Length: 424
Image 1 (tube, rainbow, N blue to C red):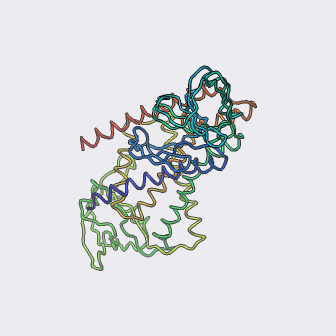
Image 2 (spheres, one colour; image 1 turned 90 degrees about the vertical axis):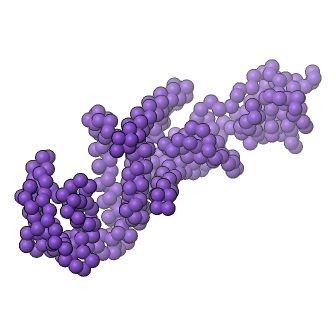
Image 3 (cartoon, rainbow, N blue to C red; image 1 turned 45 degrees about the vertical axis):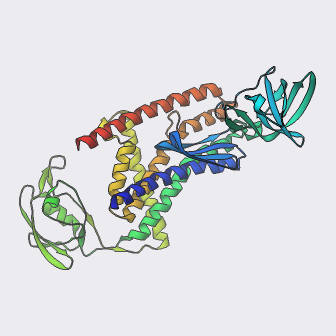
């Protein structure tokens, strides 16, 4: 049961951070009047699909992100050419359905050869029906039916490219922005749940134990209060504790900790850390906490955003400069593994981790790499400077190449993650 609960929590974390990102795109696209054809979580084959209003909501197989498909971003409707035979269904005085195939099976339709057709500006179709020319207005929400698929037409004023530079930039930037908002809110919730350290603490406790280090083998436990080391009272003097441990590499130390109100005697031998040049036992401290006020909650959440942003940018810098090995990277498999481990530590830690993932997703998507939101914003900015858009076909090709490169990297790190799990 615990494993099932952990898996569900991992799925929920991915679903929340991806959904809020795509909802940002979706909401501001709809506000700008753009026709949103699909709101998808995941990539690849559809697992679940439901249509509500003009938008189809889908859950796809590969949990590596999501997308909002807006009208006009990519070629999406089969073009109808003059001379082509089609069938239209007319309701009132407007065409509501345009059929391109299986015409003999269609009922209550007008069948004819296309003389002229405009589905973007004038919304009008003229047909040659048994030698007679007939013209019809096309409803702005008419559907084109071909090969069993119903596709709503997109008049020019409903397409992404017809909107102002500001509207398009806002629709693109809104995705990462919503991730930043989610991260900030989750950090505030985490601070409200965990509290903040008291000033001048009078005790130091074990907050985390690193596996494979002396503290783990000595039976230290998270929550233990460190009372004395080698007979010296520690109190709240964490720096003194660090000094004593650092000077005692490979030397046994006598620790007294308070566990569940009772003193426990332990012997711990710090191991030499070659990088630091001093002894380490593999612990992280925790201090007495108190409830945070509303102002403190906002302040500490802001500090967490700034600090984690610096850490994330430093990691991305190493990625750009190539200062990494493949094992340093983690794909969906490793991220899910770490998320599962954190979920087992409790909901408070999971909320903090979700905030970090949301912040990372927002920052990563703003990178100026093809197929990411940052690259699309660069194209929009370039259009604003030069006064005309880049050739849509060229831009689509750039994004396609970038997406392919990202998928190849994803496959590589996922393969490496699976090998790492198999090898233990």
